[in-house]
Image (tube, rainbow, N blue to C red; front, top):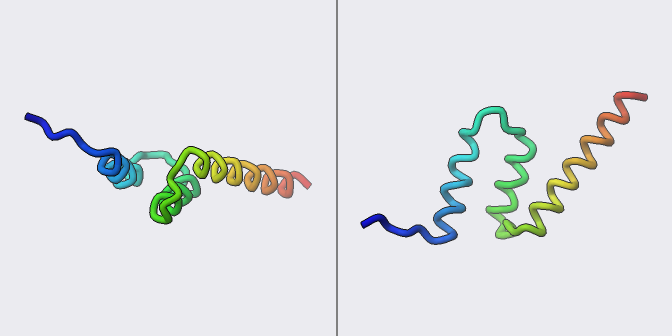
Amino acid sequence: MEEIKSGKDVINDFISEILNVPNTDEKVLHKLIVLYTSGKFSEKYILNAMDELKRNELKRVEKEDE
């Protein structure tokens, strides 16, 4: 019989494998790993972190256009 993994085990596997996904944004990966290792891997923190990355990228592009 196959063992049923806990939620924590599933997330651990996800974090381990995400580094092997081709063409992923390193900044996104870094944010996700930092959130996970700091115990803040929840929907709220992930959405806030992705929003922050998006705002920073928009600022960077705007500066390039000046």
